Image 1 (tube, rainbow, N blue to C red):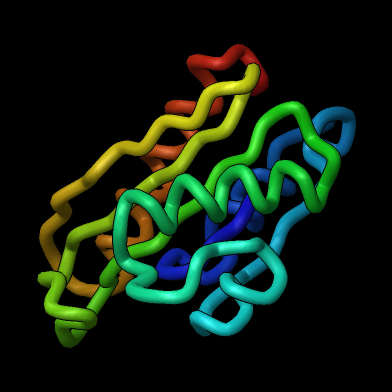
Image 2 (cartoon, one colour):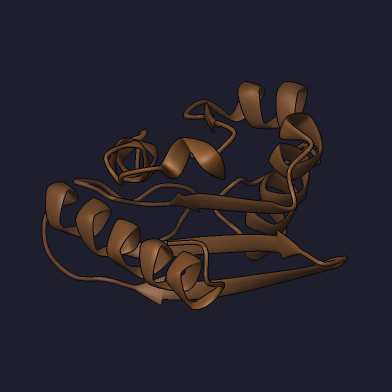
Length: 131
């Protein structure tokens, strides 16, 4: 798991799931762009993009030597960033040699946006039959 705008919320929810230690290896809170570039092999440039989410997912997948890599990058607010509106969140998922990206448009304040992004990701993980 590589989290940016969700700030570790998703990992906190995952480790609260009984027996998650059997399948969850860990993750990175890559809040600053330099962490994304240096640790997760994201290409320099804007980080609130589908490309960055995909690269974060594949980067954390490689870093953790995991079957699946999941990432979030976006704007939880209260202000816009990189010209992107509050509530725009990209979710990257790397699994089985494929990388997908979901673009979310969420509403509300920072806490609500982070919570809804976390809910979306946990639902995606559940669909992969991991929960």
